[in-house]
Length: 295
Image 1 (spheres, one colour):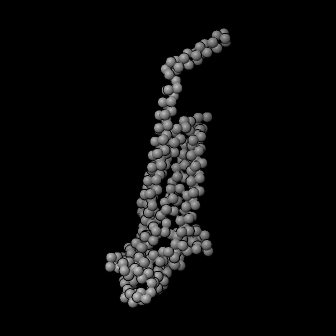
Image 2 (cartoon, rainbow, N blue to C red; image 1 turned 45 degrees about the vertical axis):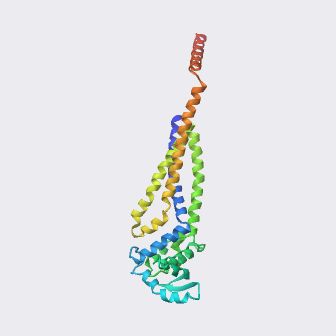
Image 3 (cartoon, helix red, strand yellow; image 1 turned 180 degrees about the vertical axis):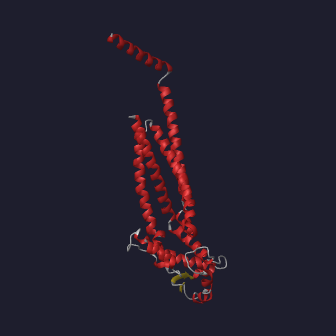
């Protein structure tokens, strides 16, 4: 019976570790895909396009040069208006005239303003015309890489990957796996012979999963190649989740060890040395009486 129970405990612990790792990844993705993180990352991606650091475009395209050329007409237009609209490489940009005031301090202010307007469009875009995974069809991804202009930003359904729809999708997956985690913790508690060990086991597994999560971004970057900037976007909150899992694991292990000491101390207080001797003596006398009756 003990062997079966121990085997089941090992089996449930392995499943628990896998579920922890997956839930951690889902949490990283949902936190990383918040609007402010996506906006910040795409501004950096746009800047790297101008420096030939990103191979999404098939030909050289200097976004800085293109936007700087509209600076003078934009200054004239903004004297009586608050926004300036332009079409650039097949993509419509909306620039707030207030961005001109930042140019002296931030040379890339116009780029940041233009990209921000595009990010806001595709981030909150309604992707109900295709499911989350349907939008990631091979055709959609290949079309995104084949474009020689910036029109893929508005038209490619593959951008569902960095949308609010994706954030909600991964968040829901995390909550689903969180429910599974709670069930597995209960199973570990029921299977552990010493209940204090349940906290130590779950805490140790959480710490182990946190270390695995910490390495996920590096592994993804290794396989991403020229798309590593997108990996940085998807896993930008890896450090936050790693720390949260690590602290939680340490707290659970500490609580388990503390309970073991408390339990041991309570046993020592409950039974003095004389009490133990009396119990042993009674058991010996009982056994002796049983033998004499059998004779």
